[in-house]
Length: 272
Ligand SMILES: NC(=O)c1ccc[n+]([C@@H]2O[C@H](COP(=O)([O-])OP(=O)(O)OC[C@H]3O[C@@H](n4cnc5c(N)ncnc54)[C@H](OP(=O)(O)O)[C@@H]3O)[C@@H](O)[C@H]2O)c1
View 1 (cartoon, helix red, strand yellow):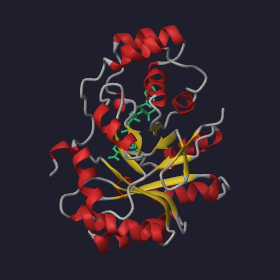
View 2 (tube, helix red, strand yellow):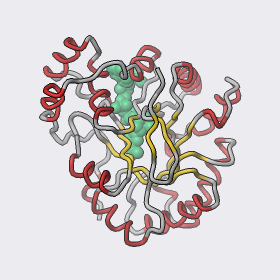
View 3 (cartoon, rainbow, N blue to C red):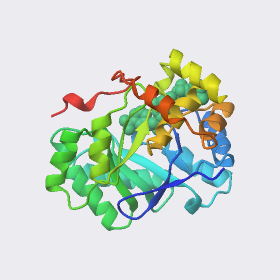
């Protein structure tokens, strides 16, 4: 089934479902996950300098004879590469590892205090030079976005944040919608740490889908971009097979009650 595209504020389009690549460190795991994902219509691949696997994307493109333009690559500036010059330098290194002359989406990985302003200026320059189709941020709260608005010439196209059934972040969603910043939900399966909720189990049975598929479908119906990670063949296939059913209004409403502010990754809310 064709994956819908989401239109970003810079006019580019990004598939609504992508493959997360955090902790995919082993080259063989990477290659087989990538190939399985590509064969099953994934076109968006979410890497980062911190994941140390950008070079595997280049290898996979060559090995499987994929056109670079046929896929979209996201990478992220690591926290220790913040600052204007270091951001530009590390971005250049990422391009070399990716063996590409552009990325589709480059994000600032975290709202690093003080240095995030000059790093954003570097991303604006990267965008102006055509080295990234889109630029964005990750783990930014409303406060960080409000600050950024004051110094930015270009607003982020994407804010990639932890978002799942148990951490729904309704205020951030509302803010991003209003400001035309698309939200990309990372850890959409809550890292696999909350797979026993009775309501989700019940709905999985009702819709003849898996627990994970209910979690992911919920996010699709919120109109979010999602990047579930898996290195397991059947899960990679399952995680994209969520477009042939719809969670009914009353069930969707009950899923909204499951929000319990569960963070499974880093927490940016206390970062000044
Ligand atoms: N910007 C950021 O700060 C940030 C932070 C975290 C993550 N991310 C991005 O978001 C992506 C996704 O987040 P994540 O990897 O942390 O967590 P996730 O996608 O919520 O969960 C991944 C875990 O769930 C398991 N899993 C996958 N599909 C499943 C299924 N259908 N049924 C049961 N279990 C399943 C995976 O196991 P197997 O792999 O063993 O199948 C893995 O252990 C990352 O890979 C990364 O690209 C970004």
